Every structure is written in C-alpha cells, then in structure tokens.
Length: 126
Image (cartoon, rainbow, N blue to C red; front, side, top):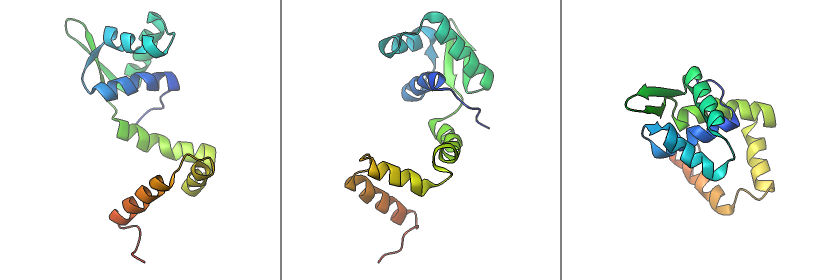
C-alpha cells in the first residue's frame, strides 16, 4: 500500500523517478537548490520521512544512495481516487469537464482520449 506523500516529498520523488537510478543526498540537494529555498536539514527530513513511509530506500555504500521504492504509476493509482473523491465527488466526468471548461483539455487531447478508449475497447465504432 502506498502511503500518502506530501507535496514537498513529491518533489524528491519526481527527481528519483526522472533519474531512475540511486542518487546521493548531494545529487538530490543540488537538484532541489535550483527550484526551492530548502536548506540541508529540510531535505534530510523529507528523505527520512520518505524512508520511514517505505517510499524510498536508503542504501549505504561509500555514501548513502536513495532509490524510489514506489513507482510513479503506483503513486498515481493510489492518489487519483482520493483526488477525485476530494475535489470532484468521485466523478471522473466532473474532472474532465473542469479541464475542458478551464481550457486545459484541447481538441488534440480529446482526440487522443478517443483513440485511447477505442484501443482499450471502451468505445464502439459509430
């Protein structure tokens, strides 16, 4: 079971997912210094919490290397239902409508969704 990840912890997970290899604290810190004002102890705390949750593994070599234990796909599968419940009363349709009305969902996106559902067997030829 995937434990909830805070927005700050998610920033570290994104780095681990993107790099897809064990990373040292220094590599993670260097990456986070670009987009945040977090200090060393904040990053250490976030990594410790992720390890305690089981979302990240820390392996001792010459330095400690951190690896994601939870894939992006596992995280999304765990978070999407909670997000839909919290924001859209559990309705995927309300989410899609909000994306369309907000201008986020383009005609190209809709065409891709149609192709996806057709390939998945969820749409019949008309």
